[in-house]
Amino acid sequence: MGGGWSTTDMRNMLRKTVSYVVLACVGLFMLFPFLWMFSTSVKPAGDVFKSVDSPFKALVPREAQWGNYSKVYEATQGMGGGFSRWYLNSVLVAVVVTLGQVTTSACAAYAFSRLQFPGRDKLFLGYIGTMMIRGAVTMIPNFILMRKITEWLTVAAPFVNWDAPRVVYLFGHVYDVGRLVGLDSYFALIVPVMFSAYGTFMLRQFFMSIPRDLEEAATIDGCGLFRIFTTIILPLSKPALATLGIFTFLGNWQSFYWPLIMLTQDSMKTLPLGLLSFMGLYSTQWTLLMAGSMMMILPMIVVFVIGQKWFISGIQMGALKG
Amino acid sequence: MIPVNILGSLFLAMVMNQKLRGIVVFRTIYFLPTIVMGVGTYLLWRWIYNPDYGAINSMITHWLPRWLNEGIRGLEVEWPPQWLASVLWAKPALMFMTFWTVVGGYNMILFLAALQGVSPELYEAADIDGANWWQKFRAITWPLVSPTTFFVFTMSLIGGLQGGFDQAYVMTRGGPSGSTTTISYYIFNHAFAWNHMGYAAAMAWVLFTAVFAVTMVNWRYGGRVVHY
Image 1 (tube, rainbow over the protein chains, first blue to last red):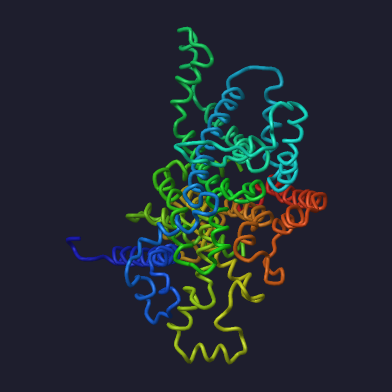
Image 2: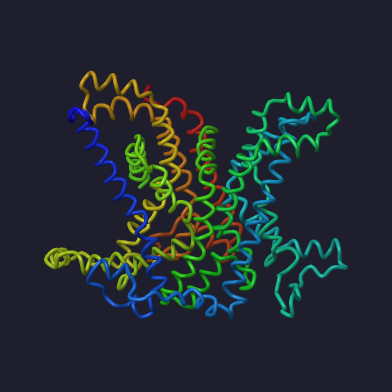
């Protein structure tokens, strides 16, 4: 800025400053609840019920009680293994569902985009059409299916006790792992949500955009369909696969309605449900509740911050589909 | 509430649609509530709305000047509000929470993409003609993002029609006096609390029909209800 400030420069400066101030205020508004959550989670239990007379005292704890976090584990120990078990359940379910959805969607999308078979496009249209039928409609039939499935399997295969809850012995401990299928089973939490019409649609769009020249060359070299899928299509589709994976993981980690109607046993619960039953018992222990909530949302923040590039482009891709 | 949320998102997107440093940081922060929305944040907001020790009421009682608090109480309004426990305030409380959750989320990202597609030449031409901020918004920005606005609006409507179960279940149990009961929570109660499976399934189909109608409107007119 050698030759003094022109009015346009001044106006630009002013506009930028105002923009930053607005952005920072909104940012503070967005972050404040999280700060409040964090500061509550490390306060001594009694301090949250003391009235505050300054903003600083409200947000900055008198002393940091990191012990609140381990207290969450201790306090829930009696509830079917408690917080650590819920965490394990959540991780297990979210990871398996994510891998499952990405795998099944990729295979289906490959078939719908590359294989030639009669009725393929009608079948695809039908599959995509299931997206129109919302979760609210299929929830009740799915529930009844899961409730009855043990009865049906008992008729079909009487030599297995389908109704009995199972246990696993591991390192000298006994762990409840619920039924094989039906209510209170990992099967119910994982299998019904392992397939995604949306994921298939999205990946098919992506696969269609991959030029076929590479595959033709590979076919000449004697590659089969499966080799082409694993060595050409999948490596080229990493961004799309990552997008789908992140969407699925984040969605499943928060999943509430379906586990709520599938589960009754404490030991089978995922984090959202576990946190809720924890609240039922310790409704005024806000320091512990906030510590539990912090631990629940941290993995999502990490996944989002790492994967946000794919996530944002995924949203924009989804909007184009209209 | 949907229009307010959408206008908020559009406003944020417009502020962000500039060559500023650190925009990604802001975008990440704004998106966080959408990402973590769930039982964790519902518990958090229950705590924020706690009538005695929550963040909001602490601020109201300690930071607002005494004469203002007395004045409002003098109007025979419930003050400070009992929030989730109050028939009057429970719904606004949930709406405010929803605003916090969605304003920087998907809609803002979509608006941002739409704004980045608007050719800067249009604004330059308008500058030469001496248009002010509002005229530029009215004549260029609003018409050019109108397809996105329409899409976002119908999507929010679809979401709003079937949503709200988790909040209702975790935060208010549909109360007080049913003031925060959504359709999905009502269906849940009939199906799984009172075991009226058939009735609940029928309601789910009615809900589906309504959502389907909105979706059809979106498809048919989505390309047409635009201002250019």
